[in-house]
Image (cartoon, rainbow, N blue to C red):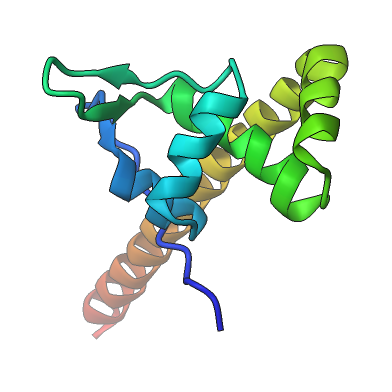
Length: 131
């Protein structure tokens, strides 16, 4: 059985993520991310003076596009490169749409929790005033 994905909990307060966090997010080895960085121009995380890679959300989105093409669609590296050059806008829009939908889902779940809590509070308040 392969590695298990550990999704990154993105935070507005946090700008950078380590290469290990990104690797865990996609359930791949750190070495694969380094390799993709050499193979694909669109993956270019910031490096500190000591050479530590720091991934921004935008960098992680670029890794997600490559991951989708290579791992999920089964494309070769050359095929993925060609697709990125010819259909970059389409793939970027797809990734952004998925990210937006994920955020919307999270917000809807939070609203559902709040409604359930309000409903329970109101129900309780109604039974105590009826008595």
